Length: 161
Image (cartoon, rainbow, N blue to C red):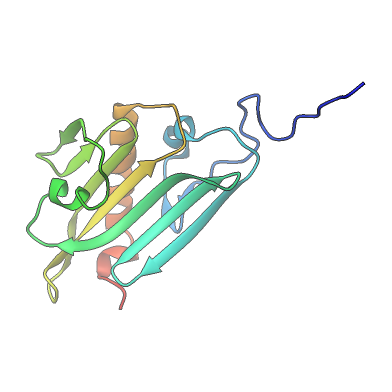
């Protein structure tokens, strides 16, 4: 008789704790949890280059969520910024286009985070890759709260050289 033992979380459960910070920036774990896939292990890895900070969140080795903070051309709107970040259509916007979002992605423009020397402003992004869950209202809350937290962080002081 052959017996197969299932490893992992095929039952749809999360055997990991959802972190409350991604690479130093707080996130609303309660809002984020429905977007995360089932699995055993979660890993959070930063990738920083001059002017941009990505934070990749993987579940069982597969990219699930990516956040981004990027210094980008000042005087532009969020829609202009997101064209370089995604090929997907964004369904909604808030605050006169300051936030643009869909059921799985959101992008924002910070207030007051300006680098006068280079004429840049700080933009944010929150993308979910490995999920069947789509919720535009929840994504709006995530990108707005994430952007507000970035505004209060050291990232708002200017791009790293």
